[in-house]
Length: 164
Ligand SMILES: [Zn+2]
Image (cartoon, rainbow, N blue to C red; front, top):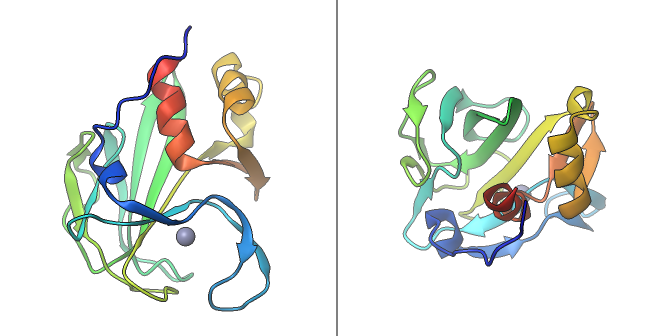
C-alpha cells in the first residue's frame, strides 16, 4: 500500500466545495451541527457518480434529502453507500449499474437546501469496524460515527481508495 499523488480527473471535483465535512452552523436551523458530507457546487449543473456500483435508491427522500441518488459500491468486500442529495432531477433508476463519472442527476435545491448544490456523503456500517481495510481508511480519513454508520469525509475517502 502506498499513497500516491491524487489525480483530479473526477467529474465531481470539477465543482467547488461550498461547505466541507465537519462541524458547522446548520444553514437552516442555525444550530451547531455535524455536516456528514461535502457540499459541492457543480461546474456544469450536473451530478456525476464517483465510485463504480449499483443504484440502491433514486427517489424523493422524507428527511430533507430532496430528490436523491444512493449508490452502493463493494470495495475489497466492504459495502460503501454514497448519497447525492438535493437533485433537481434524477437521471438513473434504482437497480442501474453505474460507473465512476457517469451522469446520474441534474443538480438542484430540493429538500432542505438553501441553493443549488450537491450534498455528497459516503458511509459504511460500524459493523465493518474490525475489517483491516476499513481500519486503514479510518486512520487516513476524517470520519464520524452516527447512527451505527461511519461517515467519511467523502472527497478524502475517494483519494484514500485510490491508494489503498
Ligand atoms: Zn450538505
